[in-house]
Image 1: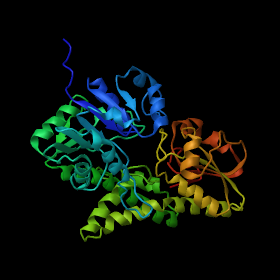
Image 2 (image 1 turned 90 degrees about the horizontal axis):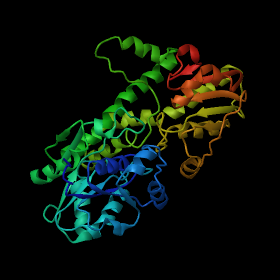
Image 3 (image 1 turned 60 degrees about the vertical axis):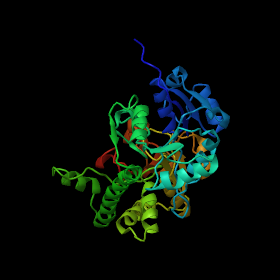
Image 4 (image 1 turned 60 degrees about the horizontal axis):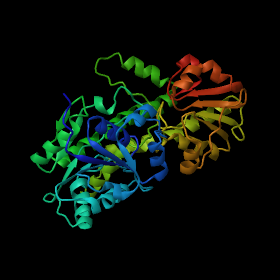
Length: 426
């Protein structure tokens, strides 16, 4: 017996790593689903069954009943609007809510009485009801909480992670009232196999999301600080962590670069709101400073090692392997490898950037960098394995060393090849 078609007609705004998988999942659950994005070129590829981010397969796209559009009038008649747009920070480390406000402006003309608006983007507590609500009311002429309803359900997408897919991770849901929360549950329950957690309020859900990544950021900052200390002691940090990890309650965090759209950004949303309320968060901001400066530390360690081997950094050729913010995905947002590239250039080093996952046009447009298509054999004074892509692991340390000159330095930031397989590790 066929299941009844769900009543909601859903529009998902923002077709990136969060919105696109969600739109496809909702369509699979039987919802009439529209995926909307302002990037017409991206939408055109999706309509042809291709995801340039590589997060969903061409087969999934081509078999989906979801529709895709960059024309705002396609939103006409939708009863539920899910906003999955980016929430970046400014150069001053303040929240940039322009994409959220832009999404509100896009859907406002198409809000009808009884509409449901769900925000999925990471924000500081209060944004859904204090920013989105008034903005939508002003632009649509409808009253938030009465003529249309607000809800918040933070995304928990981990790009490139098939194990922790959207369907397999518990999802937090919240809304302005219990009746609306039931409606939100009816939207997500057919999609999220791991279950839903009903938060008591929208602000509780917003706060829960923003501290998830803040906690992880601080734990990584702690082991990064261990690394800064142990490097001055001549100790191998990963060996120390391995020894400490034999205790049952020692947490298995490792040092590294902290980039991406979540961990390196979300804490600033919380600290911004805290400072608005007159509280200066010291621990969170200290962790951010440590993590944001790791690219400088990596470069300085390499320069010292080159000098110790009698290699003049000025004009030295260095191969930087990996540019995405994490392994096995194409996402370069807020990648801290860019800091290494900038620091190397400041030392008059000549760096080559190589990453088989990265679209060269994106790297050039966003960072002014042009990745090489393939590294040269025997050409480099040092090789930095900055991202643990499977392709680099499969090459092995011997093949990577063959890319360098005799005596070249292999700096394995992720500890992929073990102590014996590299000259430097974080």
